[in-house]
Image (cartoon, rainbow, N blue to C red; front, top):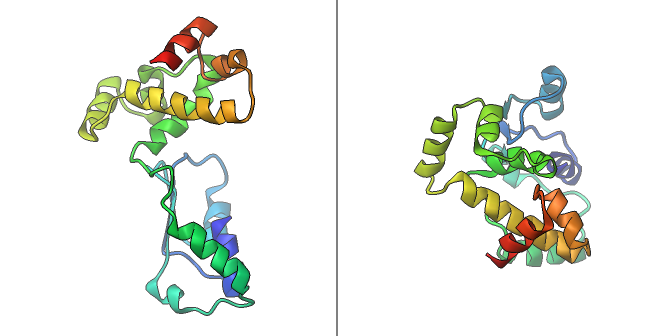
Amino acid sequence: MLLRVCRKLMGSRIIPLSVSLAHHCSGDLAQIKSLFGCDVQFGDYSDGLTFDAAVLGLPVIGIDPFLTELLSDFASKPSPRVCRPWTLVENTISPLLPHGEASADNVAHRLGVSERTFARRLAAQGTAFGLILDGLRHELTITCMQDGLQASRIAWLLGFHQSSSFTHACKR
């Protein structure tokens, strides 16, 4: 979507130098490469587009001064969520939560590494699976509560087998 917006704003089919995506390839690689116009790296730690510096010099067509001011204000504010190197782990955990399958061994298997290698790589980044899982559940709990979901539904969505386990985790 970001690339489509950039192409629309520039009025040309700009092509990134590289594209990295946190998820794994699940479609036709040739079609994906054709869409971006370059090679795409899957299974990276985060999503990203890299452009040639010359792209920064391209004029923006149909510029809207009001929108420019609004977006400039938005872009100058600090982001509430910092991009972390373990985004791939969070992306792997998320679909497993409602099924109660978010365990270190299951996530490691899905990432194609042994549980011990997985633990070592997380330790090298200064974290552990339990900390990532708790942090992700915390963020999702806040989002779900802001959306007005009932505690029992949130507990199920986050993979807690009993509401009391969810309550205990919230107290922590």
